[in-house]
Image 1 (cartoon, rainbow, N blue to C red):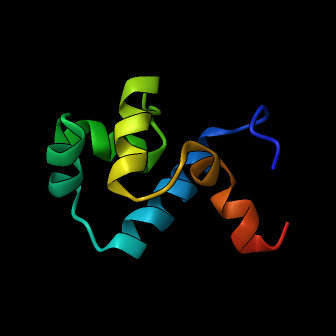
Image 2: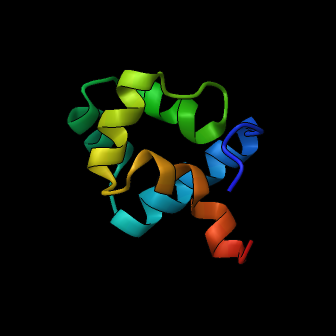
Length: 79
């Protein structure tokens, strides 16, 4: 997985896959990460991406390492 060339739509897809796999609501994710639901909504819609601090917390919530998070869609697609 090449984590250097990430696009917003790819990040959005990865987060959406994780949310669906974990069955969490945006509110639940926000509470666990320590941010607001609108931030989660922005991440899911690809408007913004989590900063390093929030990405670390998000990975804990969705039970993925940052590497797994970045590579998840490529693994699912078989790349």
